[in-house]
Amino acid sequence: MAHQTRKECSRKAWILMTLLVIAGCDSFQSSYTLYRNSVTNENMRLHVATFDSSDGHDYNHGNCRIAAELFQKQDGVKTKFWCEKGKYRK
Image (tube, rainbow, N blue to C red; front, side, top):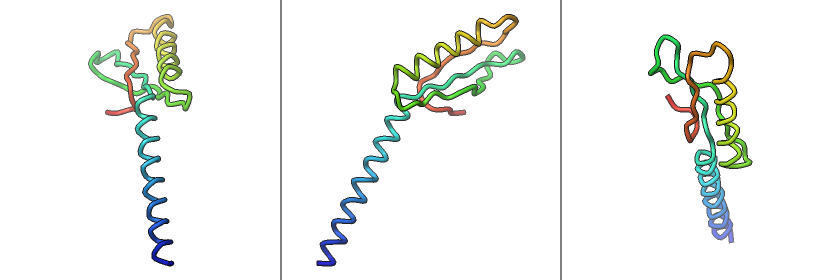
């Protein structure tokens, strides 16, 4: 009987780990990150914000795009802002 319990616990742990991995993948697939370059180096890629709400891809992409447009439209801004799919990476 104890053997059955260990098997059942092991199975539940495996299911939980699988669900966590899937949830993490989904979060990466639906998140967007806002970047900007530098006034002194147009090839520089600097992190501004990450949009990873549980509301999904369209929500995160839309908010990132809106933020990029608002930053870009400010008077005197000489840097470029853009969104990339996924969480922040160097």
